[in-house]
Length: 411
Image 1 (tube, rainbow, N blue to C red):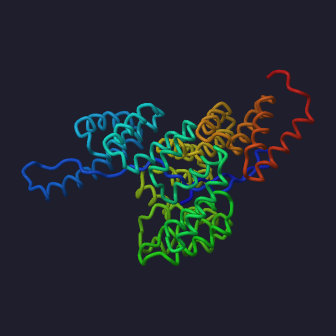
Image 2: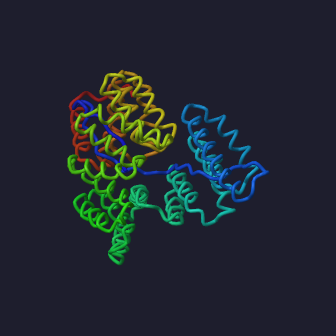
Image 3: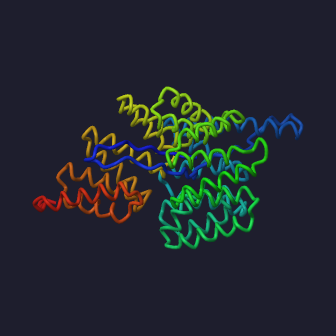
């Protein structure tokens, strides 16, 4: 799955961005709730599940639409009364996380793990929380216990890069795939690692092999990943049929809906992209990628306030979604709302430390305000941290221009 789209900047602000793999950290799950006591046990279990399905959908929608405090209160009451139910407890932790109450989120996740030590989904959430706090070793330990799926491997790559042992991690995943050449899941995992380290041609070949091994009717993960790898190298016309094939068998596949929408955006076919993204929001109301892409379409249509609203909604559902901070800050930058732009970029850096693009854009914002010393510092960070060559080149260009100007004495 892929998320995040950056503007094609004027040279004064830099460059356009690379596609960023989606990292799913905050998944809400559906669990049984309640049934009338007069029903037989087997039937009551079914109604139990149906009832909580509806309640969880309502709670998620309320939280996305700004009622997060009210939903937290409801969930606190529910979890106290029903401490053994995993889904509501996970959602409560997720909502604390969205409010940046990380201590309460950790407490909820830890309480659930005390009851269910092998609960992989909760370990995954805890790993995401520790990652946000830059507790790299704790995050990796939690993710190890979650046995993450392929979509989480970009986050693992980022963590291992921060810890300094990325090469060892890549070799470990490669060896696992080589020992199990017919295991589709291990091939998808390794392919995602290759994508995350920029080895796109190798990733494409691996995803092709994983697709060949896919059981009939269960090939959407491989189709999505192969399509996304094609999009990485701008082979949009190769990606589109794969995503359409997935949606023909699974019309609500969120990954395929978002990626196909993004493919059409790449081709400036906004009228075809928007309905797909709207479907993606209906399929998964509390994931950030579709909101960011809808925001991009709104920006392209000169509706920047609507775009900002969508970027803010993406941040509401996933406070770690770095791409939303980038696009939100850039909109504020264009409107000369520099204090708001600064806040967006600084917040983005708090959840994505050492992000070269964010450093560059914060530097550009500082420079527009005459904060030359601060601008220089951020451009230097961008040169040191950025993985994208275009960002590094733009930052060096700005530093060269600053070197030719009189030194700043005010800041």
